[in-house]
Length: 319
Image (cartoon, rainbow, N blue to C red):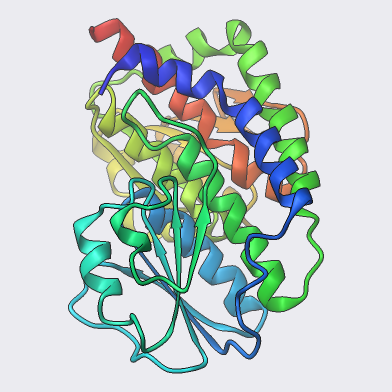
């Protein structure tokens, strides 16, 4: 793992997104997914599962039985002809995911989503979909996380018949990403200082974009090795609120939940520090806005970049 190369990986996001948008317009990599799918089982670990958990929620809302399983779970849904198994591994070699998908090969339709075609995860798969994120030379899953979330949006459209227009979403995401990168001189130092407390960073997001909180917390842990924990906005008042009483509580907050104000009531009362991304909340210390941040799908794909850049800054300062 290398902080300089990780930073370069982040700077390459807009170009990679544009390339993915063009690839999706040229041909549908999901065209071979069979019709009549009733159940979707996502298998993955870490950021792969973060992206899948949000995708599973979207599919359930559309009436499809879907679950994002820890690949390390001893068992899950049984295989069947109407089951689609989506095995996600950027490297193609995640041990837990390889073990889990082995239970389904030749018993259900297996889709391997990976950044390395030809890797072990593709062996025996009925369909391989490349992430097209390019090499992540920094050793941290950042572009692959973003591309996983994007391709799972495309899978949602394939399974439900929705017309999200994923290539157009990707182009808006590239513009939003470029906007944050181009203007980082205006916000990055202040945001880094605001979240730089003695008791770690807490990330908060609505269920529909919980992957943003999960990925953000992971970036703080994986690069600069800071303590960080993610929480869903409504659940925050049941599980994380207690920490505001005893800690120097500093949160990276992604607005958009109907329960934003419920959380902010406690934060306001206890004088905790909140930095919002993509929207503004009363009594937050600061807000980072970016182009197209009123589009929930663009937010889903873009907003973790704020944490990724802060993590890169802290990591570089330590090296």
